[in-house]
Image (cartoon, rainbow, N blue to C red; front, side, top):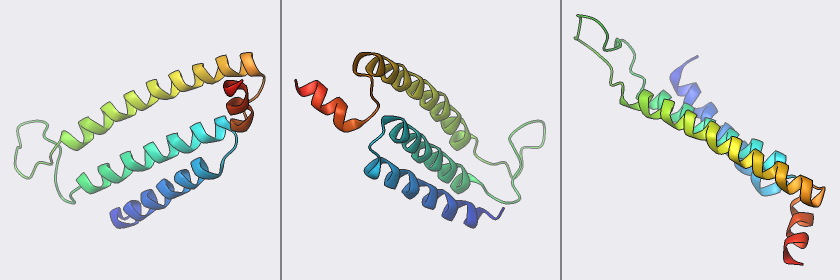
Length: 113
């Protein structure tokens, strides 16, 4: 896949996730949309850091090496994103056991009472 197309695809994917967060009444759909936005940002930053013709900085040949920093930061972002998603889903399970719903409106009404 061409890198320019990957950048466009990641921007489109981000806005699909953003639309899902704004229009969703279900907490699970909001979590999935947030994860989609996160993966779109990661894909965008990795695609920006890609340079055609460069090699990884491994071995004896250190000419024309690419910068490993964007990849390392995005691996860290993936690990943090998985941990945050796990915590959010754990909180959702607790809310569902307490209020028997995953609808934002019902949870807001139950919280205000």
